[in-house]
Image 1 (cartoon, one colour):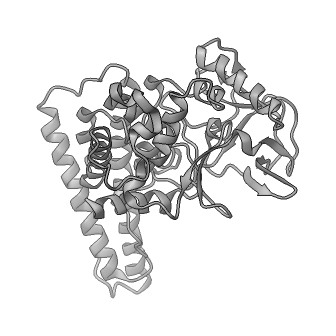
Image 2 (image 1 turned 180 degrees about the horizontal axis):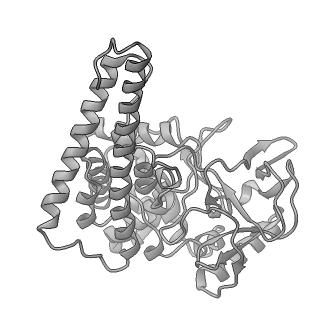
Length: 388
């Protein structure tokens, strides 16, 4: 189990440091600016109160939280912002510190989850405005709260192991089985509320916290930053974080290009493959936005197509075998009833089925690309190499 824990968190740090904010399940990645529309949902009213709290605490906000015509919540500029200017700044008093990233052992995966739960169960919490603005459970998903019936749809032993490990650890945390190793215990975080805590509530808090905390230089802390986690992902978005710089040690997002008034403010969560984006953030943000789609992380390795025909042959053989395995899964699935959505997770099922399509399209495209490289190499050498 220790090895699995280490693998889980080494992956999270390697792929997403700083840990980037999540778009909740109902909040898909942003693309071109879309005209925003007003909404009166409870969490949207709370988002207005969140901005007001940040301003009252000495922060700055040239944005507001709104929804576009598709119902996607995001940040929108309230005035024109030039490149190099602050989009917003969040004072230290509004940032939830969830613990030390470097010092925590693998068993302390729960620190961000318990830090958020503590504020959820603390009457008159300083962070009550932040907590109220969080998306509801039906709009929040990642590997922490993925329904068990959906796990086989990942069609990857690696990701299935990761998701089941998350669930196992949360179950053990709830049952007190980690009391000998965890830095913070559930009753220490939430008091008597631990007596009535359910696995679903713990999974929801884990999904929120694990998809939102950010780490980075110079402070290796796990931080939950209001507003930052409401910016939707856009690949290549140029806006950048500037944090804890004197004389103003606040958390700032700085514009990397001019932003028009009313335009949605994006943030790049990193160069993610779609399987990483779905398990960590509940979105599709990688291959679905390229033509052809990019390979999933579990299908890709550090292959150099210029390294020689023998390597190309091995890679083609590997990818063709992987695609054949998936086609066999498709054949078997065709004889079974179609997957049924879990209540509240209908969109999650659509995303997972879409991921399966993207994966097959990406494999077909990569097989074709490597095959074309082999043919070109053969022609370039006068047919001296064997055709792939």
